[in-house]
Image (cartoon, rainbow, N blue to C red):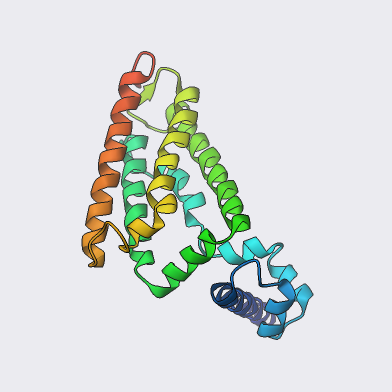
Length: 229
């Protein structure tokens, strides 16, 4: 019985992968708006309903496998090493995220993904929704870290406000660095042609930004940061 279930699960996963890869190839070739679910189903040789069984919307199909950043900032805070301040863990993750994005944009697949996204108002709108989800989840994680006995060595005097503002501002900074300036980060303008040189430069800028934001939080929060325990 378990073998039958495993075989069905593998078949389902294979079908999902086929649909996703077929769709993303069509999007890169024709543009997002020009491709219909029927086009995807025909190219993948599956029924239209099969596509919908795996992906409720065409936007879900496009972004599938490309949105670890929605959950990851909150996860970086929640899974940080004992004694590590939440903002330190978040800072490190976000710099790594910028580096990963620059490397992705150095590949043909990454450039095609970015070009398709930038050309589509519907995809940009969906990306803004995903960004809002990331902000909400990060704010919740920071609140937990600062008020839930999560071992944060210091907490803001007003943790609720600090969590909301920090999540909004820090992720807005990431959005500016790796979404609005995709062309710059890809190395097409402003960065060295060598990918790793571009990574180093982008990470340096990101590090300065998040260092400044951390300092600003400490100085602007009423009462500053106070030690726990």
